[in-house]
Figure (cartoon, rainbow, N blue to C red):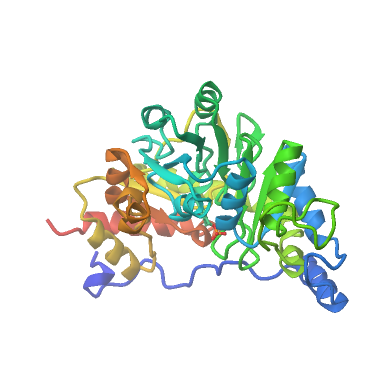
Length: 387
Ligand SMILES: *Cc1c(COP(=O)(O)O)cnc(C)c1O
């Protein structure tokens, strides 16, 4: 069969579902109510942000939460609330979005970029152990693509060395590890509602935490250094306005009612893709860490044989109507981070991942016809690849 890149007929001509999905009636109703109320800000007496925070804290199995403008700022506020700052080091995985590291810089601390596990691509407990120094203050596991990180070994290490744990749950709304929700497994967890995420208000973020005093400090960081319940013009600490609006919260609160169904749908697609890929030996689905009970499948990461020309694969797949993404460069290769003082540990597994992993987008996992098209296009492109 002639590849579409060589003038053949593409596997898929129909467009993929849009992301975000169309507004549902509950979102439309709540957003309209907030707009008509005039209570758009977070400090005018509206209750939607507070309801969203409560719902997320409850779903994360903890008592407290703070809504923020985005997860980059949320990670910063979580670190600051845990007392991490100048002179401290924070260990982050090498295969993640750049914001995991830039949030550490924002807090005035030094990101230490450690390798991921070569199989599951999550922050490697062995690499963390090797990266710990006298200045290490925190570890930031990332629940990559909706797959929970290996939290038990990481929490054990943190406990042994007296380190804080901030979970970057930006991609993992609704995921569970050993039947416990991510976000509530460390000292603080941070979700993102940026436009590409599994729940979105265009932008937004939310921090959850268990400890009352951590909550007070995180809240103060996000509210100009005020004290919870204190004076409006009293600023006993230094803080910033990092707040989410009621309008954004009105898009998100109703979404929680359909999140589980959407996660189930993406999981069904991933299972179908994995079955269909049995006939494509060059492509495999990376295993998940022990203890994974629910992967929220923000994306599906696929491992491609190192012998495959990945640039050709990506171009040919796009021509077949199945565009895949190349994913992250390793954080340690980003000069902007090292120029700001980031310390880079050896990261061969992240470098290998950057060369051999491709991503299937979330919107494609929402289409029941997606798995067959994705597998057919992969089989076609890989059997027609140049010698
Ligand atoms: C999206 C993302 C962030 C940053 O979230 P924003 O809300 O865009 O600031 C941080 N970490 C990871 C892993 C992400 O995917």
